[in-house]
Image (cartoon, rainbow, N blue to C red; front, side, top):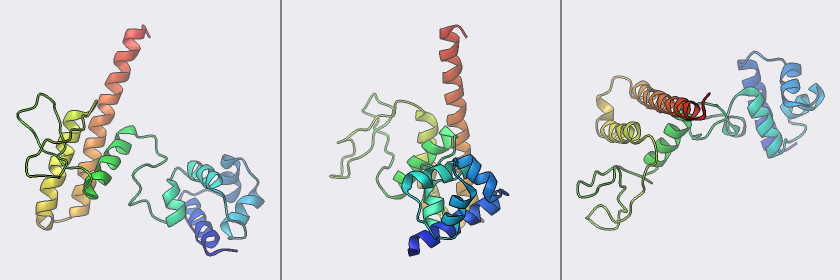
Length: 187
C-alpha cells in the first residue's frame, strides 16, 4: 500500500459518505464490484487515473477532490455547469496573474489583454469570442475585490456570490444561443 493509495482511498470514502452513497451504490455507478471499490477505499489498491475519473464522475466531484481532498483550486470539474467552468477557468487565470483586463479605447475590439512587456498596453491581444460582457464584469470586479478585499465583511462569501452570478449570466447566454440554434434548425 502506498501513501497515495491510502490518501485517495480516504478521500473516496469521505465523499461517498458525504453524498449518502453505499459502497455498493457507488461501485454500480462506476461499473465495478463492491470488492474493488472497497480495496480502493482501504488503500489496498491504488486506482489508475481512468479509474479515479470514473469514481469522480460517479460521485459528481472533480478528480482534484479525490486526489488532493480539496476542490478549491480545481478550475475544471466534473460538473455540467458550463458557465461555472468558464468562470472558474478565468478566475484561475486572473488569480495566477496570467490575465488582466485593460480596455484599449483605440481598438475596435471588445477586449485586449496587456502583454506586460512595456508601459503601453496593447502589444498582444486575446479576443473573447463569446460572453464578453459577463467576463469583463468578472475581471473588473475581481480587480476591485483585490484592492478592497479587507473592507468586505465576508470576502469568501462575496467572491462566491460574484463567481456564481457571472456563471449564471453565462449559462443564460449559452441557453439563448442554444435556443437560437434550435430555432434555425426548425426544432
